[in-house]
Amino acid sequence: MALEQFTANWNYPTNIRQGLGRIKELPDVCKQLGMQAPLLITDPGLAEMTIVTSACKACCDAGLSCEIFSDIVSNPTEENVAKGVEVYGQGDHDGVIAFGGGSAIDAAKAVALMVGQDRPLWDFEDIADNWSRVNVAKMAPVVAVPTTAGTGSEVGRASVITDSKNHIKRLIFHPKMLPEMVILDAELTFGLPAHLTAATGMDAFSHALEAYCADYYHPMAEGIALEAIRLVKDYLPRATENGQDRQARSQLLVASTMGATAFQRGLGAMHALAHPLGALYNSHHGLLNAILMPYVLQANRAAIEVKIARLATYLELPDTTFSGFLRWVVDLREQLGIPHTLADINIDEAKSEQIGQMAFDDPSAAGNPVAFSASEYRQLFENARRGRLSLD
Image 1 (cartoon, rainbow, N blue to C red):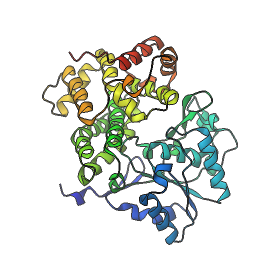
Image 2 (cartoon, one colour; image 1 turned 120 degrees about the vertical axis):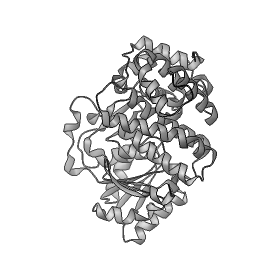
Image 3 (cartoon, rainbow, N blue to C red; image 1 turned 135 degrees about the vertical axis):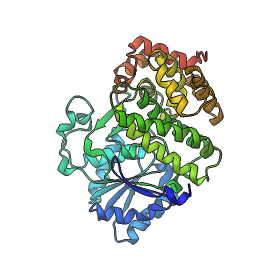
Image 4 (spheres, rainbow, N blue to C red; image 1 turned 180 degrees about the vertical axis):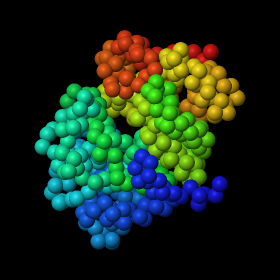
């Protein structure tokens, strides 16, 4: 298929403009959403880079009053969100451009939610019907521009924000947090280093894989997850090896969006563990999921063996058994330079009991095909830290 055929407009699950070079449409998109003074929220590493400064300048050249806010850490906190809300108000902004990886987009969506609320952020945590407390009329419109192919936050209805006082990650949710427009321009991912391409790509894989394995009945999400995994299989190694591979970058960015679209079916133990580990050790979320993946697969084997064999057949793996799929995952990680254990990224066992309980309490645990206890999560964590994995 010619590369030009990868340019498209979609409306699933929101309005998406996909294709190389489409960042040039950002000013028009902002105007369509009624913005005259957007606040572009990104992370500090991107704030001075050309892809961000050029986007901001293009908005200003088109008559918009655009400002950049980048006071965000890699696992955004409630303090980051509060500062963003303050800057939004001081600049009389009327919309948000969420520009960057998952951390920047999550923070931006939370800022857009909070600019019109008179309750604290944690009042909108994804518990029961907390979302109904939101004053929807005062939420700011959002256009999302991802620069990594991993989290898929651009099509998410929630933000993961770290509670820095209690060292846990909380999910802030409202259906209207879904950005009204997304620009998927793979050219913005060309400069992503190989190790981040690998880690974020494996994050997209984890989203699709956990969605595929979840028990919740959602055939549409299951089908999207299946194809997202195939795209990761075919294009993540290529994108990691050659960051300028336009086709691989394009397909991987689409796979990321698909993975996050699919996980409304549910996530699982990978994310249930990755969330507390990220909060306690400030480790990269995608890298954590990549390391945890084979250990969680092994622990879930009894419940997912038939599904995994079907997936392996779809992927046309040489060995379509569960063991064959597990070996392929381990080989893929090695090919991408992903560490084999949590110990390899300096995570110790000092907090293993706490991690087990936090994983058990994490909302993602509800989607896992096996209902692990807190002690079983602790054992799973220790297996991943020590490298206890059987490939038979």
